[in-house]
Amino acid sequence: MEKIKMTTPLVEMDGDEMTRVLWGMIKETLILPYVDLKTEYYDLGLLSRNATKDQITVDAALATKRLGVAVKCATITPNKQRMEEYPELTEMWKSPNGTIRAILDGTAFRAPIVLPCIKPVVKNWEKPITIARHAYGDMYKAVDMTTEEPGTATLTFKGESGAEKTLTVQTVNGPAVWQGQHNLESSIRAFARSCFQYALSQKQDLWFSTKDTIAKVYDGEFKRIFEEEYESSCKAEFEKAGITYFYTLIDDAVARVIRSKGGFIWALKNYDGDVMSDMVAAAFGSLAMMTSVLVSPDGTMEFEASHGTVTRHYYRYLKGESTSTNPMATIFAWSGALKRRGELDSLPELVRFGERLEAASLKTLEDGIMTRDLLPLVEPGFQARGVDSGEFLEAIAARL
Image 1 (tube, helix red, strand yellow):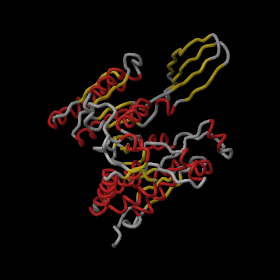
Image 2 (cartoon, helix red, strand yellow):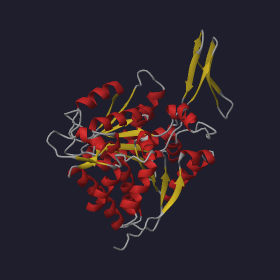
Image 3 (tube, helix red, strand yellow):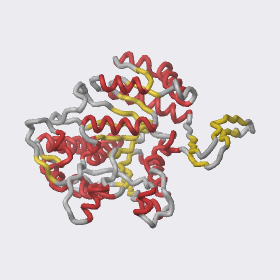
Image 4 (cartoon, helix red, strand yellow):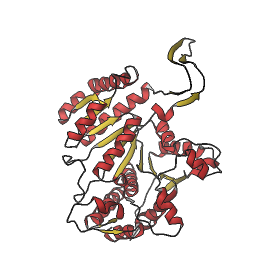
């Protein structure tokens, strides 16, 4: 067949470990035979980030702003253990996802890939729950330190005008640990606008929850800005669409989510969204079956898998052992990016290819061919066969 043409490249961000291996396999088996793929390539593998002092992450994010669409592989965020594992590292580099989210000022929307043969752990969930995670600030841009003696910590803001504000954080009588975090009014407002617009596009109710009874000022700003945006810009459209905006405290929201039937968007602050997206993914089946797209207020989108780099499988792969790593989230990252590129460039063939790639992947699972992580999750009586990653991709290719 003649390959499907692209006019504008999308940004391709390569990653680490087993997901990097799958990245190449997916391109070779499912994309390159059918698409004349055009990408602007950035290697965000840990050693590449180290060699460039993380400048390549910034470059990839700026390229995404310029080209409008990106697809990203899972990457390592080093901790103390990783520093020992990679002795050539010169610094404990920050999360590339955090850097990219800050530059794009986007909101991460994560939703499970639902299959008839895998029922949610929460039996009353009938429809997917989409997590809208604020993608800037909080502890992901925080500074922290430890102290060893009695003393007092203060928080001081020095304005450009020369004005100062100072608060006493705490007086301690011994060793302590401290953290200072922040957010931007512009970023919170962009988060709110993205959530409301996404809810309207999906025609789903929007829930938002914080803990403004405790963090009266910090979380209170989130609540205030969401209410302002809703009342001033979205209320009439929501009512016309027959959907609702609902705010409640996060502990109450958790209880309501568990009792719900699903089918709504749950907007959360950065850390809350990080945690709850994994919880929702696991309850629906698997983190490997969770789509993720970062949406900026200007329409820029970055598609990625929401899981990690699958280190355990990678070390088995290095020993020459076959692995059964689930590539579904990474496949859907590629299909989402190709569909978005096709939409922006008026290339219906590229949009259809993305749709058919997803349909072929789902059909493979519905036919009972799946990676072994899903076997314990299928309903009793469903005939399923576990295969390794390569066999699974070949089975998708046969249906594609």
